[in-house]
Length: 250
Figure 1 (cartoon, rainbow, N blue to C red):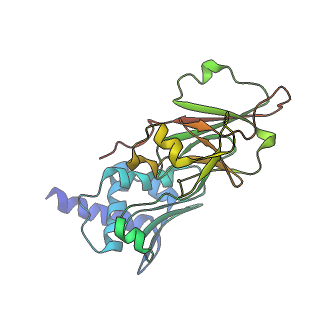
Figure 2: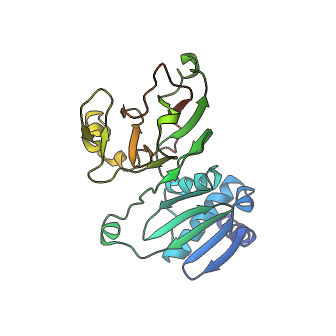
């Protein structure tokens, strides 16, 4: 009886928040979706995913569902995550779009979601849908006292005027290298993660912070040698990463 009642409520909630739908696509109004209770948000996401892959997803993990919820909650107006079976969830300003797209052979073989690039705001906190943790960006014309940073799992500071482009977070790619602070030349990101003892199953969801074409920081692992803070620095950019602000693995 309870499940029948939930079924009616969830289908009604979906009708209330859907802006458009097609054979392989559902578009939701973000504001309407976020006005639903968390329980309804989760069940609406499950319902849409079950429609798109034509199967019951009762056992879908809470982690995967909450990645989509974070996508809707995120201040970033443009971000994307890949779920499974070719399903992509994408935020486009006021819309949350679910699309089933053709899978590559590698995606079909592994059946795992692959986080895409997420642009970071110039200032403020940002959730990282599909990635581990949460990022906060602080800009200042003065050094920030260290006591303001001591409760953060990992942080890095850069000379803002020396960075070449907007900040973003992306997943590791084969062959990625970084110019490491305190080292000569470039080192493979894979090697850096192995040395930091990051479990293999977590590496694809570990956020790499980039600017322009360069990786500038691997939170909790190593900072690049780009944009160092010196006596002539006039604008400071602080990146703070909270490793624990992420759904529990299930």
